[in-house]
Image (cartoon, rainbow, N blue to C red; front, side):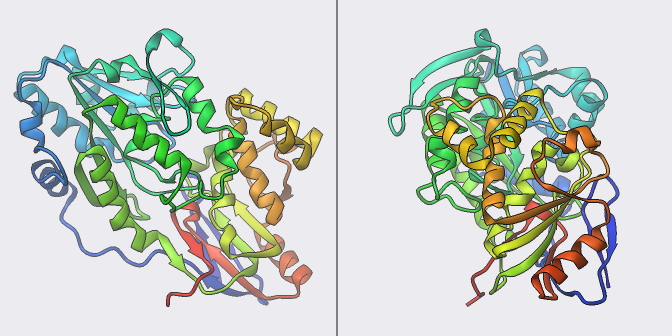
Length: 429
């Protein structure tokens, strides 16, 4: 049997060993939906909560639209121009409209990458498209601290000062905040590094409620909600896409309510009850653009843990064409490898602020505690692989065969879309 995994830009096909008895875990099919242009127009005209888009644009002097960075395949090319044209028609000067890339602590998106991200030359020609830089103190406004957990709240002044604020993004499972999109595009999206590094501290990361698909008592979600309420009036356009990157759902309106509407839609297609655990789980890091660094690959390791049997083997395919990731992440991985998982975690528990990108290394501790992690990657040279802390597979078929033999169990789980699907050991009943 041959299986296809999302991998890089073109995917990868794997011939399974003859002994394998696979359970392939995919999303159910999305229902038929209107074309993308119609979906967006309908969402903007019929908000989940608050006024419609045209009314919101009236009597505004400036606007800021947040978009996700290149690590999220958001269909920006579908909605940016109609939104900007609506703002201009309402009298907002082009010079006062900013598209702000919510990079968090990621690198900026520049040049050809910026053009790919925006997806529409008209946008780049008519309004300012700028990156958020979390390390630039002067770019942020201090809004105080949250009452819930004392998180320092500093946000990009281009958003705070705008007369009309709109966040846009993709709603999908997030291995820490429950679901991406909505409030998450604000914080950590355009937050100061102290805000982000507080979110990424062990105080939050080790909380059992800070996990994929969970918004109940999730400390990150609760703090994000408080932050957008501190900011004041803000709206959101939330999107859901299928495995072929087609737009299948759009919601618009007040940021909290419109995000929840998208979450309720997508749950039925991403939270997949499987009814059991497996000794061998084969997954991906969701292909381009998510699997371009090892940093992003960790997400694909965490998402399927509910169906990994104790001491099982997790095999993940990720292209990693850009290598490990940032220098900060490499430094954290080097500490993990040199100190070992237990000592590394102990060093984190004493910190109020996580080091930049250190949190992703902490997330890797979860699959390492659960079992053995095996990575197949054509993009990582040996010098980079040395800091991953996991085993390397040079042949996916052989890695699967070795796991079947080691566990004496031919039944394997295969998750072609990686972290876009969250398999759960519970039964459908």
